[in-house]
Structures are given as C-alpha cells and as structure tokens.
Amino acid sequence: MPVATPVTPVEAVQSLKETENVSIEAYPSSFYADFLSEHAKNRLPSPIRGLFHHEKVPGMISMLAGKPNPGLFPITSIAITVRSPLDGVTEKTIELKGETLEEALQYGPTHGIPRAHKWFMGLQEVAHNRPQAPDWDLSVGAGSQDLIYKAFLALLNPGESVLVEAPVYAGVVPLLVGQHAHCVEVDTDEHGASVESMRHALENWPANKPKPKVFYTVPYGCNPSGVTTSLERREAILQLAHEHNFIIMEDDPYYYLYFGSAPRPPSYWELEARYNDRPRGRVLRFDSFSKILSSGLRLGLVTGPRALVEAINMHTASANLQVSSTTQAIAYTFLSDWGYETFFEHTRKVSEFYRRKRDVFARGLEKHLTGLAEWTTPEAGMFFWIKLHLPSTPVAPEGDSERVIKEKALEAGVLALPGKSFFVLGRATPYVRAAFSLLDENDVDEGLRRLAEVVKAIQA
Image (cartoon, rainbow, N blue to C red; front, side):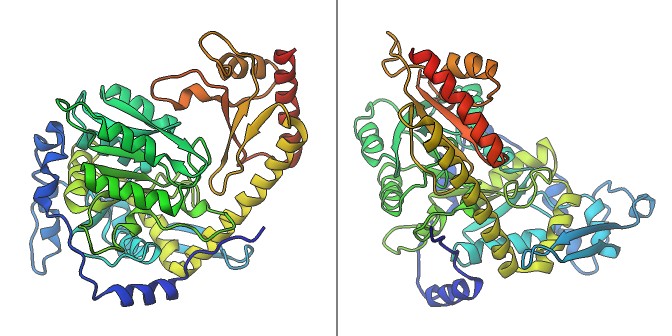
C-alpha cells in the first residue's frame, strides 16, 4: 500500500511565501471573553511570572524572583545520545552545558523556555502552513493531557454544554464528568464526526439554553475508533463552528502517525487559515510528542488564539509554574540539531512502523475474527475499534462487550478495553478497543485467537 508523505519543509516554506500577502481577519482578544469560564476570568495572574520577560531587557538588574543560584546545582552536564532518523543506526552524543545547561536546570517562562518555544512555533508554522502572527500563540505543557484538562477548566463552567464525538477518548470522560459538563454526543462513522448529527443537535437546541461552547475531537486515528476525519467533514464542521459559535478543540496526538494511502488531510488549525471569507480563531490545537519522541518526556503543545492560550498559561502559573525546563531543553537540543526536515523524516519512519503493525493486526483479525466481528482498518494511530457479534439483551440489542472483555477475555488471557469506556453517557455497546502498538506477530495471532474463542463460547 502506498504511504502518503508529509509536505516537506521546502514545500511548506514556499506555500507560506505564497500566502503571505493573503489578508485573513482574526478575531480580536475581546471576542473570547464569552468563551472563558468564570474560573478563568477570576484567576489572578502570577505577580512574579508576569514580570519574568523584563529580566531579558539589556542592563536590567533583577531582584524579582527567588531563583536558586545555579552555582549550587550539583549537575555539571547532561549528555544525551540520539539515533539518527536518516539511517536509523548512526548515533550522536550531544552535551548540555554552559548557558544551555543553566537554562535547563532553572525556572523558566510559563509558556516554555525561550529556545524551545521558538522552535515549536516554527514547527507549527512549517507543519501546518500557517505563518506566525500576533493573533496566535503556543504553550508547552506536561503532555497534551495536562493542557486539555486546563483548557476545559478555562472554557467550561459547571453545567455548560460541550459537543463530543461518540465514541470519545476515554481520558477526557473523567475531566468532563468532574466538571459537571453537559455532554452532547455526536455520532461518528468511517469518515469522522457526523455533520448531520451535529447540525441536528445545534439547530434543534432548546431556545432557553446556551448552545455548546466547544466541540472536542481527535481527528487523526481517533482513539478509540481509529477513524481519520475527511477533508469534507472538517470543512463542514468549521463552517458549523462559525454558524453556531463554538471552539473546536483539536486533540491531535496521532497527527504524525498518519499512514493512509491518500494524502494526509490538513489539520483544522491549518484549514481555518486557508479561507479569507471568515475570521480565523475557532481552533485550539493540542499536539503530543509522546507517540513520536518519548512518552516519559511529558511534552505537549497547545496552539491557538492568544487569549485562550494565555488563560491556560495562567492556570499553569498557579498550578505547577511550568513544564520541566530540563525535559524541554533535552528535547530542544536534539530537535534543533536535527532541524525540521530531519524531524519530519523521523515521523515518517514512525508512521511507517505503525503501518506495518496495523497490517499485521489486520491479517490476524481476518484470520481469527472473520464472521465473529466487524472492523474498519485505521489509517492513523494505534487502535482497532472492533464490533463483536454478541447475543442481544433487553438493554443492549447488539450485545454488550463490558462483561465479555472484563471477565471472559481476561480469564482467557487477553486484556483490552470494552467500548463502554469511550462513551460519556456510558452506553452499552458491542465494541472493544484493541491497541496494536507493542504487539509482535506471534502475540497478535495468539491474542486474537483467544478473543475469537471467547466470542464463539458466548455465541454457543
């Protein structure tokens, strides 16, 4: 199967040059006042961190912060050895020392240490063909989950409505339930979120109740469904965001894990800047480096309207001050050494690796679960969303995978997640999510054989 390659940095820069003279109106910061929660509006800025940037003014003598003296830090150097993405073999050792090490070990700005923040801004510019501009900003988080949690707090008051895909990433369910959000499920299919389902909900919304402020989506290799939202759906949903006044929270940890045969569709964040017939600023984008660099580094990005990013920063300044300067410095050191082109080559190889894993799992499904289940082969991500053929029950006409997976499959030595975990309203469902990222071919074959035996026993 041919694999789509991302736009190269050279092509992206050329595209940016061609769009430099296109004037696209952006929403002013005041526009977002109605989107912010009372929690966000009432949050006081950090009296110290709000003045950090003045320390960089030449000649400034700072008595501002209680920063520890770096001469007392016992760490005198940090060396990291990185394998080259170009040949997958050559290794290079890079040392953090001097001012770079001092920055890595010291407090830094809430939105990210300067070198890393600048590199990530450039990455978003090149990867999404969107020139840097005063209306948007970026902040580094302790993984995208950290930023998503803070974004929901910044946008939603208790009881306010949010549109969510059904099924939805299970990690946001506790966040939304904990905030007492009114969750409205949007149906999905093999092309992504259903525009008809969303439009029906919005056009028939009760007149005495505020419409949803937010639509939460995972548009590439959706966790759990594996679906990548089509370009046509993205364009239609962006139009609905303007018509019904909501923000798209684009949670995109699998953007770089796209291995479909067709060209990768543009992100919502890129797409909204392509058209000059409506203002930009409807997308709050979340990126993760967990799937492509290291999950243990705990690095993620939020990119979007400056006013919303700043609301998230204010939460961080109060909650955890900043993301670890050390992990940011480590990531920046080898990423800047690579450059954008080598970074994209690395992600291309990562996506190709997972494509091969996907193919092995697909063959195992065909071998063991044909006639016992249904599935759609994903074009991104790490998951298959499998509909088991289970006996009907009075409360679950298509069957319920909850007990099957948590009890029967577990007893048979297979661990997976029942589909109920991925619906905010906890509906009964015959679906199960299976991750293929770590399994070798033998484990895939044996695991699916065991699952097939469980389904057969239940059908008997």
